[in-house]
Image (cartoon, rainbow, N blue to C red; front, top):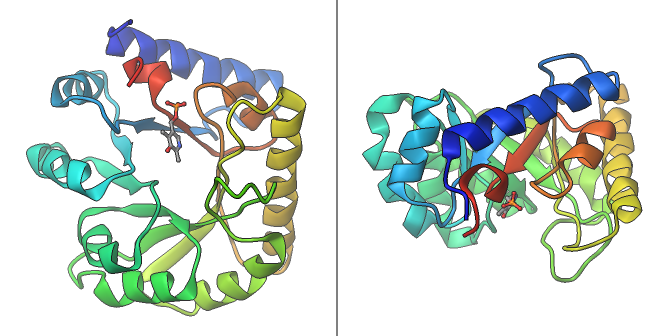
Length: 227
Ligand SMILES: *Cc1c(COP(=O)(O)O)cnc(C)c1O
Protein backbone atom coordinates (compact mmCIF):
# COMPACT_ATOMS: atom_id res chain seq x y z
CA UNK A 1 0.00 0.00 0.00
CA UNK A 2 0.82 3.59 -0.44
CA UNK A 3 2.68 5.19 2.45
CA UNK A 4 3.38 8.56 1.00
CA UNK A 5 1.60 10.30 3.81
CA UNK A 6 2.48 13.83 2.76
CA UNK A 7 1.31 13.25 -0.80
CA UNK A 8 -1.93 11.63 0.41
CA UNK A 9 -2.59 14.53 2.74
CA UNK A 10 -2.23 17.00 -0.15
CA UNK A 11 -4.64 14.93 -2.23
CA UNK A 12 -7.25 14.79 0.54
CA UNK A 13 -6.91 18.52 1.21
CA UNK A 14 -7.36 19.21 -2.49
CA UNK A 15 -10.45 17.01 -2.62
CA UNK A 16 -11.95 18.75 0.42
CA UNK A 17 -11.38 22.08 -1.29
CA UNK A 18 -12.86 20.82 -4.56
CA UNK A 19 -16.02 19.57 -2.81
CA UNK A 20 -16.39 22.80 -0.83
CA UNK A 21 -16.56 24.62 -4.15
CA UNK A 22 -18.71 21.99 -5.88
CA UNK A 23 -21.34 21.98 -3.11
CA UNK A 24 -21.24 25.72 -2.38
CA UNK A 25 -19.69 25.32 1.01
CA UNK A 26 -17.62 28.16 2.47
CA UNK A 27 -13.96 27.51 1.48
CA UNK A 28 -12.07 26.33 4.56
CA UNK A 29 -15.24 25.37 6.45
CA UNK A 30 -14.50 21.62 6.45
CA UNK A 31 -11.76 20.60 8.90
CA UNK A 32 -9.60 17.54 8.39
CA UNK A 33 -9.03 15.14 11.27
CA UNK A 34 -6.27 12.61 10.54
CA UNK A 35 -7.33 9.28 12.05
CA UNK A 36 -4.09 7.63 13.17
CA UNK A 37 -5.41 4.50 14.89
CA UNK A 38 -3.22 1.46 14.16
CA UNK A 39 -0.69 3.71 12.43
CA UNK A 40 2.97 4.06 13.37
CA UNK A 41 4.75 6.97 15.02
CA UNK A 42 6.74 7.38 11.78
CA UNK A 43 3.60 7.93 9.72
CA UNK A 44 2.19 10.37 12.26
CA UNK A 45 5.52 12.20 12.17
CA UNK A 46 5.23 12.52 8.39
CA UNK A 47 1.77 14.02 8.74
CA UNK A 48 3.06 16.48 11.36
CA UNK A 49 5.89 17.55 9.04
CA UNK A 50 3.26 18.17 6.36
CA UNK A 51 1.47 20.54 8.76
CA UNK A 52 -1.32 18.33 10.12
CA UNK A 53 -2.26 19.34 13.69
CA UNK A 54 -5.31 17.26 14.64
CA UNK A 55 -5.36 13.53 15.03
CA UNK A 56 -8.06 11.04 15.93
CA UNK A 57 -7.60 7.87 17.98
CA UNK A 58 -10.00 5.11 19.01
CA UNK A 59 -8.12 3.16 21.67
CA UNK A 60 -6.70 4.75 24.83
CA UNK A 61 -3.96 2.20 25.37
CA UNK A 62 -2.60 2.94 21.92
CA UNK A 63 -3.28 6.67 21.95
CA UNK A 64 -1.64 7.73 25.21
CA UNK A 65 1.94 6.70 24.29
CA UNK A 66 1.51 8.55 20.97
CA UNK A 67 0.20 11.66 22.69
CA UNK A 68 3.12 11.56 25.11
CA UNK A 69 5.63 10.97 22.33
CA UNK A 70 4.44 14.04 20.41
CA UNK A 71 3.80 16.17 23.50
CA UNK A 72 6.03 19.02 22.28
CA UNK A 73 4.29 19.31 18.90
CA UNK A 74 1.24 21.25 20.09
CA UNK A 75 -1.24 18.82 18.51
CA UNK A 76 -4.96 18.40 19.12
CA UNK A 77 -6.05 14.85 19.88
CA UNK A 78 -9.64 13.77 19.30
CA UNK A 79 -11.06 10.65 20.94
CA UNK A 80 -13.35 8.96 18.39
CA UNK A 81 -13.70 5.45 19.85
CA UNK A 82 -16.28 3.91 22.12
CA UNK A 83 -16.14 5.60 25.54
CA UNK A 84 -16.21 3.13 28.40
CA UNK A 85 -17.44 4.60 31.66
CA UNK A 86 -14.26 3.64 33.52
CA UNK A 87 -12.02 5.27 30.89
CA UNK A 88 -13.30 8.83 31.06
CA UNK A 89 -10.51 10.15 33.29
CA UNK A 90 -7.76 9.49 30.77
CA UNK A 91 -9.85 10.94 27.95
CA UNK A 92 -10.45 14.08 30.02
CA UNK A 93 -6.72 14.35 30.78
CA UNK A 94 -5.17 13.65 27.40
CA UNK A 95 -7.61 14.79 24.69
CA UNK A 96 -8.96 18.09 23.36
CA UNK A 97 -12.11 16.52 21.96
CA UNK A 98 -14.36 13.49 22.48
CA UNK A 99 -16.72 12.80 19.54
CA UNK A 100 -18.62 9.85 20.94
CA UNK A 101 -20.56 10.99 24.00
CA UNK A 102 -23.78 8.98 24.34
CA UNK A 103 -24.77 9.14 28.02
CA UNK A 104 -25.23 11.72 30.76
CA UNK A 105 -22.97 9.76 33.10
CA UNK A 106 -20.15 9.96 30.56
CA UNK A 107 -20.61 13.69 29.99
CA UNK A 108 -20.75 14.22 33.76
CA UNK A 109 -17.55 12.27 34.35
CA UNK A 110 -15.66 14.00 31.55
CA UNK A 111 -16.76 17.30 33.09
CA UNK A 112 -15.76 16.35 36.62
CA UNK A 113 -12.43 14.83 35.55
CA UNK A 114 -11.30 17.55 33.16
CA UNK A 115 -8.10 19.00 34.70
CA UNK A 116 -8.51 22.59 35.88
CA UNK A 117 -5.42 23.77 34.00
CA UNK A 118 -6.94 22.78 30.65
CA UNK A 119 -9.73 24.50 28.71
CA UNK A 120 -13.15 22.80 28.69
CA UNK A 121 -13.18 19.51 26.78
CA UNK A 122 -14.86 19.82 23.37
CA UNK A 123 -17.50 17.14 22.91
CA UNK A 124 -19.88 15.85 20.28
CA UNK A 125 -22.88 13.62 20.78
CA UNK A 126 -22.86 10.48 18.65
CA UNK A 127 -26.21 9.81 17.02
CA UNK A 128 -27.24 6.47 15.53
CA UNK A 129 -29.47 7.77 12.74
CA UNK A 130 -29.99 4.41 11.06
CA UNK A 131 -30.35 2.60 14.42
CA UNK A 132 -27.66 0.16 13.31
CA UNK A 133 -27.02 -2.22 16.24
CA UNK A 134 -23.37 -2.55 15.14
CA UNK A 135 -22.78 1.17 15.72
CA UNK A 136 -22.75 3.31 18.82
CA UNK A 137 -24.86 6.39 19.29
CA UNK A 138 -28.21 7.39 20.67
CA UNK A 139 -31.60 7.58 19.02
CA UNK A 140 -32.88 10.82 17.53
CA UNK A 141 -35.47 11.32 20.27
CA UNK A 142 -32.80 10.98 22.98
CA UNK A 143 -30.63 13.78 21.61
CA UNK A 144 -32.36 16.88 23.00
CA UNK A 145 -32.28 15.80 26.68
CA UNK A 146 -28.58 14.92 26.40
CA UNK A 147 -27.83 18.22 24.64
CA UNK A 148 -29.59 20.12 27.44
CA UNK A 149 -27.62 18.21 30.04
CA UNK A 150 -24.25 18.74 28.32
CA UNK A 151 -24.67 22.50 27.97
CA UNK A 152 -25.28 22.73 31.73
CA UNK A 153 -21.78 21.38 32.42
CA UNK A 154 -19.02 24.03 32.74
CA UNK A 155 -15.98 21.84 31.98
CA UNK A 156 -17.21 20.38 28.71
CA UNK A 157 -18.18 22.41 25.67
CA UNK A 158 -20.79 20.86 23.43
CA UNK A 159 -19.65 21.51 19.85
CA UNK A 160 -21.97 19.32 17.81
CA UNK A 161 -23.02 15.93 16.54
CA UNK A 162 -21.22 12.91 15.13
CA UNK A 163 -22.38 9.94 13.07
CA UNK A 164 -20.82 6.74 11.82
CA UNK A 165 -22.87 5.31 8.93
CA UNK A 166 -23.23 1.58 8.39
CA UNK A 167 -20.19 0.13 6.66
CA UNK A 168 -20.48 -0.41 2.92
CA UNK A 169 -23.88 1.24 2.76
CA UNK A 170 -24.85 2.74 -0.59
CA UNK A 171 -24.04 6.35 -1.27
CA UNK A 172 -27.72 7.39 -1.27
CA UNK A 173 -28.18 5.67 2.11
CA UNK A 174 -25.14 7.53 3.45
CA UNK A 175 -26.56 10.78 2.09
CA UNK A 176 -29.86 10.13 3.90
CA UNK A 177 -28.02 9.54 7.20
CA UNK A 178 -25.84 12.65 6.81
CA UNK A 179 -28.73 14.85 5.82
CA UNK A 180 -30.79 13.64 8.80
CA UNK A 181 -27.91 14.62 11.11
CA UNK A 182 -27.67 18.02 9.43
CA UNK A 183 -31.40 18.63 9.92
CA UNK A 184 -31.11 17.72 13.60
CA UNK A 185 -28.09 20.03 13.96
CA UNK A 186 -29.92 22.96 12.36
CA UNK A 187 -32.94 22.31 14.52
CA UNK A 188 -30.78 22.42 17.67
CA UNK A 189 -29.19 25.66 16.51
CA UNK A 190 -32.64 27.16 15.93
CA UNK A 191 -33.38 26.23 19.54
CA UNK A 192 -30.33 28.30 20.52
CA UNK A 193 -27.60 25.79 21.24
CA UNK A 194 -24.76 27.33 19.15
CA UNK A 195 -23.35 24.12 17.72
CA UNK A 196 -20.59 24.50 15.10
CA UNK A 197 -19.49 20.93 14.39
CA UNK A 198 -20.96 18.16 12.25
CA UNK A 199 -18.43 15.32 12.55
CA UNK A 200 -19.27 13.12 9.58
CA UNK A 201 -17.43 11.61 6.64
CA UNK A 202 -14.53 9.15 6.35
CA UNK A 203 -12.23 8.04 3.52
CA UNK A 204 -14.98 6.34 1.52
CA UNK A 205 -17.85 8.80 2.00
CA UNK A 206 -15.93 12.08 2.09
CA UNK A 207 -17.68 13.66 -0.89
CA UNK A 208 -21.20 12.73 0.24
CA UNK A 209 -20.49 14.04 3.74
CA UNK A 210 -19.27 17.42 2.46
CA UNK A 211 -22.22 17.67 0.08
CA UNK A 212 -24.53 17.13 3.06
CA UNK A 213 -22.89 19.71 5.33
CA UNK A 214 -20.03 18.09 7.23
CA UNK A 215 -17.71 20.53 9.03
CA UNK A 216 -15.17 17.90 10.10
CA UNK A 217 -14.16 14.79 8.18
CA UNK A 218 -12.31 11.94 9.89
CA UNK A 219 -9.87 10.38 7.42
CA UNK A 220 -7.66 7.39 8.20
CA UNK A 221 -6.77 5.13 5.27
CA UNK A 222 -7.03 8.00 2.77
CA UNK A 223 -4.03 9.61 4.50
CA UNK A 224 -2.04 6.78 6.06
CA UNK A 225 -2.88 3.81 3.83
CA UNK A 226 -4.45 0.56 5.00
CA UNK A 227 -4.36 -0.51 8.63
C1 LIG B 1 -11.38 4.45 11.83
C2 LIG B 1 -12.32 5.56 11.89
C3 LIG B 1 -12.33 6.58 10.93
C4 LIG B 1 -11.43 6.59 9.72
O1 LIG B 1 -11.84 5.64 8.79
P1 LIG B 1 -11.15 5.52 7.33
O2 LIG B 1 -12.14 4.72 6.58
O3 LIG B 1 -9.86 4.84 7.55
O4 LIG B 1 -10.99 6.88 6.80
C5 LIG B 1 -13.22 7.62 11.10
N1 LIG B 1 -14.07 7.67 12.14
C6 LIG B 1 -14.10 6.71 13.09
C7 LIG B 1 -15.05 6.84 14.22
C8 LIG B 1 -13.24 5.62 12.98
O5 LIG B 1 -13.30 4.67 13.92
